[in-house]
Image (cartoon, rainbow, N blue to C red):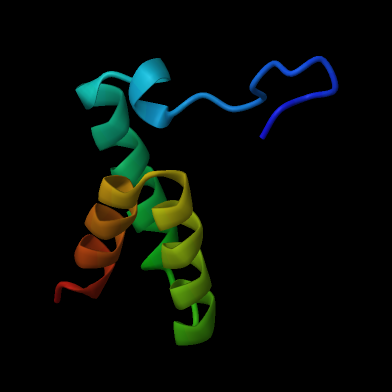
Length: 67
């Protein structure tokens, strides 16, 4: 997505977060999603994170669904 001047308004997560920061992000999101979120909301959250970063979304979904 570009702003009116043609400059990109988003930067891939991998460019602004190192591996440790992405690990903390995944742990934080998973912690909140495992706290009684309904299945329809979980599916929307997984889709949201996959749209931001496919690998992050997959890691979040896998961690939430593991029991």
